[in-house]
Length: 125
View (cartoon, one colour):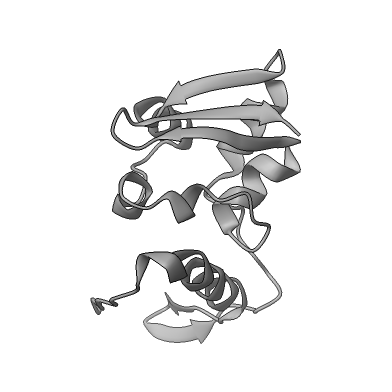
């Protein structure tokens, strides 16, 4: 495994995540099969990591719901990226962002964000 650090100015985080999402969604991945690397078909996408959040919001009642980051992690079944606790751009209502597509497809948008209190409020779009 290779680790890479990238310095991105805060005002360009949305653009960075958009580019990263496009690359991740279209780049073929290498998997080991019988000891030999094989390329996964680029057209075959695995379900979004944020699909459980999409389902949660689709099933939610009312016109607004406010949840903690811990609850989001519980819904996702894993940790949010560290950037979600630091940068507002991660929570932008942009279809260019993988995570945002999750709530936008469910018919919701982020209406308020409290990074210090680690809470996000979604409202029906």
